[in-house]
Length: 301
Length: 241
Image (cartoon, rainbow over all chains, first blue to last red; front, side):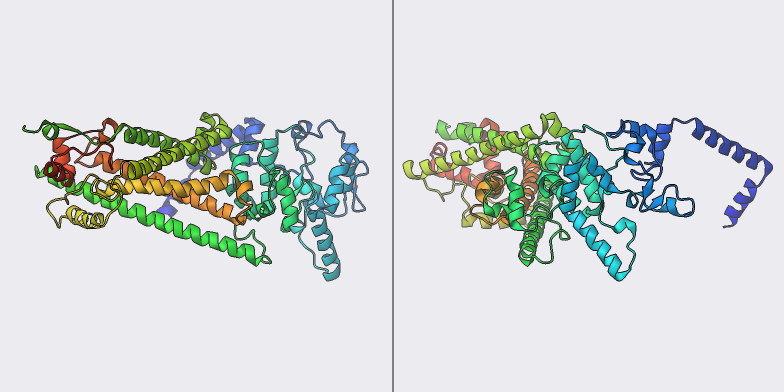
């Protein structure tokens, strides 16, 4: 501590202060003249996909880049309040996605919107809102079920991406709220082929769970229908193949599936132990064997 | 030098068929290991780079299956030869020249352990095949059956899920991967170390490629076989194992 104090006292001298100020100045100047895209790369995505602020450069390159603001933001009214709301000083700190009326998306994307309304995410959102009304407990906006803007960036999503690029983005987007499912998907054959090995014919999230409907496939019949979209001749037992094998992914209400996965886990554990024992034994045995023969050779036998 | 057939310097240890099968298995095994692991570890960049260098995942999958069929054809060849040897040549499957494990091998294994731990001065008098040679053969032979079965389940899941519950495909995947790790580490590290880096054989035992072995080597590594050869004063029947 004493040394540190001496060092800090030394810094307090005129010379050192001047030097530090020059360094600081250089840093600020270099920051100002540095290319903006490098700054952005260093800072990460400074503007999140759906915030109150937006990056016009990225917007103009996006799928909606040719639209005028008024096309989507005509009235500048969200939830009955005019924007900008000068009376509410915390307005800008609220999650912007919750204020936009995504019914407007239906004007151009009617099919997607219809599918969303019958899907699991919409059902979950309705249930959460009912719970809020009944129990009066305010759920934080981050934990609410998603609407359009939570998964799609209306300002920055690019058009005409390849199927593989969309699949990769999808894995990330869905994985934000379903991390264990993302992990187990990437460990599964479909994830490895589709995301890592770039095989177009592999299945991404929505290929099985449905685009915008986002169905749970706990029901065997539904799952089989999903399988048969690619595996035409799949028999009934085919739906029994577990895709999301993580322990968190399997429903507590399905004890049979849990028992099967527990069995597989046990087999895997035993297999690993046997592998390690066999390899360790033979590695050690070979090592000692080599030493023994070396000993013999050095003795000239 | 009374009997030229016995006293000659080189002996034929492996027939053309055995050498060809070993060579085929060697290359197919390397191929199947590389292609398989480049898919199994595709979350890592080097594996992806290797898959890319082979022309993408489609050709990796294709090659993996080509090598798998090649390997299994080698197993079939061995079985066909076995049947031919047993029923047409009327050979003895459990004789001293056999690759089959016998009770004697357990004793030899114990004695050999004693030798490498310096409890005994001499290695046991191995017959035509020492215990590790038999082990290398049978681990691959049996491993091919289990790998083949689990591999077929993964290759044709639609067909096999008619007969087995769906989670057997998951089980097959787990077992296929675990056994691949075991087989590849065993063959790539322990088999190669035993056949290359032991001072007795360093820098390599080429008998499996040339098929020829010398009198000195035979006396040293297979003294039992040598003794039997001299006692019977007869050369080993062709291709007998």
